[in-house]
Structures are given as C-alpha cells and as structure tokens.
Image 1: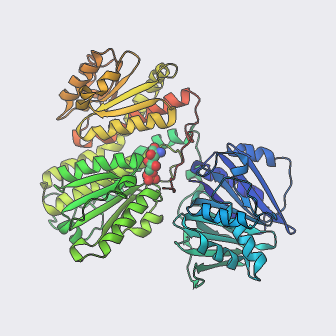
Image 2: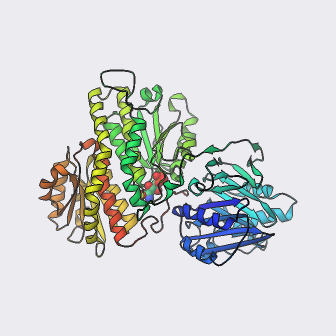
Image 3: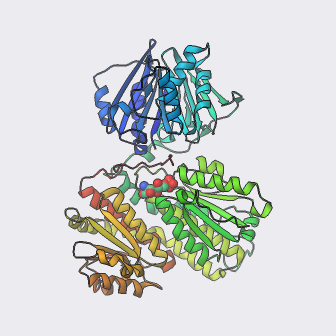
Length: 628
Ligand code: M6R
C-alpha cells in the first residue's frame, strides 16, 4: 500500500525512480510524485491519477540529479489530489519526504507546528514529517540523519519513510517502523523500495530493514542504525528472482498471465513439499510431506486458529475444512482485523496460523503480534506457536513466525490474487496431511490416494484452461452490459470457492456479488433473485452434490440464470439443471476446490476485460494492504 522508491548514485535518478514506481504501481495508484536534489536545489513534480500522468509531466524536462525519492499513493488521509500526493516538503522547499503507512498522532503534531506559524499545503498525515525535520535542522546544529532520528521519536504509528534534503545532497535517509522497506546495493549506487520488484532491474543484493532501523545511504555505502542511534552490522542477501517474472510475457494483463501460471506453480509446489521417496508400506517414521515441522508441533497441537484477510481468508476456510476433516484438529478462522479486537480465549497447545501472500498485511501482522505478546507472558503450554503461510518468506510475517510454509508462487502483480490463492490452499493440504500422518488420523492408503490425486492437479488445471478459457470469454459477454448483481453458491469444501468467485468478480468488474452456502439461500438471500441476477453454483461431485443441485433448482424456479461449475463427467446431467456449464476434469471432492476456482477466476477476468476495466489495478484497491 503506497510504493516508495529512492536512489543515490551516479546515474540520472529520474528514470530510475519512475521505472521503479511503475513496478510498484500495484501498491497504490491514485497519485504519484518524485523529488530530486541537484546543485543544492530540491525539485518536486507530482501528478494526480495513474503514473503515466507523472511520466507525461516529466517528458519534456531534463534532470541530471543523481539522488531522488518517488512515491505512488493509495490515499488514507486526504483525497487523491495532486496537493496530497507525495513527496511532501517543508516550508523552505529544502526537505522532501515520502511515506508509506499512517502517522497516528499527526493531528497533535500538526497543531504544534501550526502554532509555530507553519502552513500546511496538504491534508495528509505525512506532511508533519518534513516540517519536523526542517525544524530540527534549523534549530540545532545536527546532521540530516540525526534530525530524522529525532523526528521519528515524535511519530506514532506504522510507517516507512525516505528523506532527502537540498542541503545534504549526498545523503538519502530511510527508516522503518512496521511498514516494509528494502535497500538495494549496486556498484557505487544504492536504492530503497517498498518492494524488491522495483530493485530487480538494478541489483539482486538486497537488505530489508527491520523495525526501528534507520539507514543512511550515500554514494560510498550504507550505514544502518537503530532508532536509538546504535550502529547495526547487517549483510545483504541475494535474490534469486529474475526481472522476466515481473513482465506480462505477451498476456494482455498480469492477472491472465498469473491464472495461466497456475499449473507450473502447483507442479513446483508439489515437487518441493511431497516426498518422492515415501511409500505407504515402508518408512513408517518418514513423513510423506516435507514441511520440516517439529515433532512437538505434530504431537502437541490441540487447537488451531487462523487469521487472514480477503482471498487469504478464503484459502484459510478451505484449510479449516482440511485440518478438521483430515487431521481431526478443531480449527477456527477469523478475519485478522476482527480477531485483533475480539481474540479467542487463550487455549493451551494452540497453533496460530497467519495466511498472507504479501506477508505485509497490517491486520494479519498485528493479530499475530497481539497473539504472541499475550501468550509470551503465560506458562509453557500456552507459549505462541506461530506459522506463516506466505509467498514472501522474507517479509514481516516471515520474521515474526517461528514456522513458515513458503507458497513459492512467484511474484504476483495483479491485485486480484489467483496463483497465490492456489498455492496457499496447497499449503493447507500439506499441513493437514503432515499432521494427519503423524497423528495417525488417516491411513497410509488414504494418504497415498490423496497424494496421487494432487499429482494429477497440474494437468487438470492445464486442461481446464485449454477447454474453458475461450468458452468463458464468450459467456462473459452476456454479463458486461446490464448485469448488476451476481450470486455464488457452494457447500462444504467448496463454499469458500463461491466466496472467492464473488470476491474476484466484485473487485475487478465492479459488479456486486455475494456468496452464500447453498443451503442458506432459502433463509433470506433467495428474495434477491429474479431473471436479472445470475447464480453461479459450485457443484462438484461428492457428498453435497445433490444438495447443491437442489438449491440451484430453487434458484431456477425464481427465474435466475444458472451457471454451474462441475466435473466434465457430469456435464450432460448438469446441463439439465444449468443454463451454462463450466467444466473441470474429474477430481475427488476433497481436491476439487483447486480446480473449481479456475473457471471462476476466468469468468471474473473476462467480464472485467471485456468491460475495458483496469483488471490489474482495480479502483480503490492495492496489492499489499499495509495500513490497518
Ligand atoms: O497479502 P494478503 O494475502 O494478506 O492480502 C489479503 C487481501 O488484501 C487480498 O487477498 C485481497 O483480498 C485481494 N485483492 C484478493 O484478490
């Protein structure tokens, strides 16, 4: 949420900043700006709206500055207008600041500064920062680093900032408090960015600042200190990503590319986590799953609680089903934003799982931190066991949790999560199977059967993409003009897939969509139905198939247009109920969510694309939600 980029070195900064912001635009895209310093003068250019507006403004200017900061904004305080865009400056146009996060005590600080005669030019929380820095620089004979350090002690909230000053043309100061920021190390040049995607074209040597750390970047190197001023010795790590991963590679949108990457994501995930040497009748002490979890965790977990948001919450609901049905462990799933303020009573021997593709979602992080803090005070059987299921093991959640399942889906740029969802769901299959194996809640034969089924999934996704993509695109045309509402229904392990289908549709097509457990329709939502409201039923063969079909019939009796997602084997029979049938290859019910979600991803994608909407950067959203 909000993208920060900074550069100091020997090249012209402007293009590096703008192309860095282009790679971060998925984090926020309602306004953008850059500030540079050249020959003791600070220059700042901002534009409302998408980044191309800023690029256009800069097109006819030449700027040789070799230091600068840039920002792409997702508005929190103050409307998305040019005057609220970052960077924000002090009154003398000497200090420029970009910020990600929220300064919670900005009102008091603003009042204090206003009473000293300072005039503000924005409604943002950020603007207090350059004014404070400027005051410290003017009133005491201190360095820029010291002035930023002093300023930070006045700030409450979660933030990452980058600061430059006209009077300190060879220094870029970067600080982190609960919001991510990473430094990049080049040859005589250094970078900062709120996500490594912006650094990839320049360097693979990166170092993520930890909370309460501040860095001073100069053309000669990087110094890192704690907020208290103690020097810290840290070494960069090497990223094994390649810049191609963040290109569209011929697809019209990142989302479509990422949908098509799913067979590969599943294949490589299975290779990583399924043990090829495991055979049901041999190696009794040798798990079929390579998660590296401790025997203490296998044996002593009596209760599991999961916190997550959005699509990760949907993956968690599937996780709950698997953990309870396969491993027999009572499991709850909460929205992280709710859990924080109404936590469950503290139960002994609890595993707490945070699920987040970005690893930075503020609510999820805060819920886990709260859990860790309250349990740490208690005796040993209450001690926190925190497991992260994330696509970014190097992120904040990775640093917080003592166990990690790395979903390894590769970078996901589209704001609508697709491949990371599938990868999270797989993470839950592994965890449930691993626990089931060690706790002997499933026979080895059943485990083998499930694993065999998992091995078929990549081919089945490929087949679904091949057979359904075009057909769904055709179908999508019918919903792009007049359809204002959609209903999704599902039951059992596929109710979360109905939720996910509805979320995908609303976030990128702006069509209102709701999902219900199919059996709940008659308790109220059925009143919404008429011929204008299509109903999508996830009707995968298995224990609840007949029930879902009956619930779909109830919708049909109210004139709803019925779309069914089912197995190809069932297509003919399902055709007697549904107006349109979207099929996936035959699959056992337990594994069916991984396939059933694919047609729903395609349906929402094609509806949004045909409507000409900005599929990868839908309005009001951001990929990484780092504010609470
Ligand atoms: O990074 P996270 O998985 O924690 O993100 C959680 C949600 O913000 C995210 O899933 C959001 O709902 C997506 N835009 C869904 O497509």
